Length: 462
Image (tube, rainbow, N blue to C red; front, side):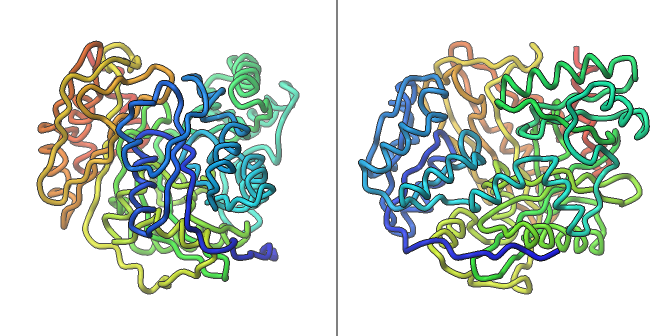
C-alpha cells in the first residue's frame, strides 16, 4: 500500500487560539508560553472564572454553558480566532479535536489546525475505515464485519459467524461511548438497534460495525509523533487496562509484563499504520493484547491523549511542544534511536464522581483543594479553592502523575500522592478512594489485571 504524501504544515506560529477548557487548556498555554507563543483562550459563561484562564494573553467568551453553543460550536470559535488574529488553533482533546470538518474550516480560513490533516482525521476517525486501513498496512485486526452494517439480520449473521461475545461499535464513537457488548445471541437485535439510535443521537452518525469481543485482554496503546518531512517515531507503550465501562481510569508507561519483543512489534505496527495514513502530529494507535501475547488493532486517536503525561515522564519529550513545532512545519529533532524510555510513570484520573452511587457526577463548589507534592509528582488540574465544578462538562478535575525507577516504587509514590490529595466542597465527591483501592488490588500490583478489573471491583463493592 502506498502512503499518502505528507506535506509540512504552514508558516511559523506566533499565536494560538486554545479551543478547549480545563486542565488541557492550561497544559497547552504553558507549552505555548515556553515557546514565546501568544495565547488566546476561549471560554463559555460557565468558565468565566476558571483558573485555566489565568495563563492566557487574551480571553474571548464564545457562548453559554451548553457545549453545543460554545466549545462545540465552530462558528463562534472561528470568529474568535479571526478577530484575535491568531495563526493557529489547538483543539486539545475531546470537543472538536477529531472533527475533520472543523479542521477543514480552520484551513479554509488560513488557520493552522494543530493536528493531522482533515483527510487523515476523517479516515482514522471512521473506525470501520481505520480498521480497513490498518489491515491493509499489515496490522492484525479482530474478526469482524468488513464494513458498516445497517441491517440487523445481516449484522446478526456476522455476529453468529464470529462467535459471542461480540461488540457493536459506532464508527464515530469515542471516549468509551457508542459501544455495546453482546454475550447472548437473543440480545443482539435489541443491542444493535439501540446502539445505532444512540450513535445517531450522540455523534450524528448512526453507522455501526461488529467485531469479536475479548474479555480478558489488556488495552495497550502506542504514542507516535510524525512530522511533515517523512519521520515517524513511536514513544513507547502505555497500558490503559484499568477502565470503568471502557472509560480509562489509570494509565501507565511502559505497559507492565510485555516482552521487549512484543513492545517492539507494537511500536512498529503503530508506525506502519501512521505511515499508511499519511499521519502528521501527535497520535495514538490502540491495541488489545490477549493472554497469549497476540495483539489486534482497535482504533486510532488523532489528537493529544488525556494520558500523554506518562509518556512525557518516561521519555523526557514534551508532546504538546512537539505538536506545536510539527504544525509550524518543523522536522522532528530526534529519531527512533533517540527515544529511550526510563523508569515507570503512572497516571490516575481524579473525577468528581461518587463511586458509591454508580459513579454519578457530583458538580458543586470546591471549598478545599490541596494537591499532593513531593519528588517526581505532577498534578495537571484546573481545580482550586472556590472553583465551581459545572454539570455541563466532563467530570475530570485533575490528573496525578508520578515517576519512579521501577513499578513498585511508582505504585507506592502514587498511593502516597492520593492520600495527600484533599478535595472537599458542597456536593463534591471524587474517585480518589476507588483509585486507591485499585492500586492496592493484588492483580494490579502483580500486573495480572486486564480490562475487566475495575468493573469486577465495582460489582463487589458494598
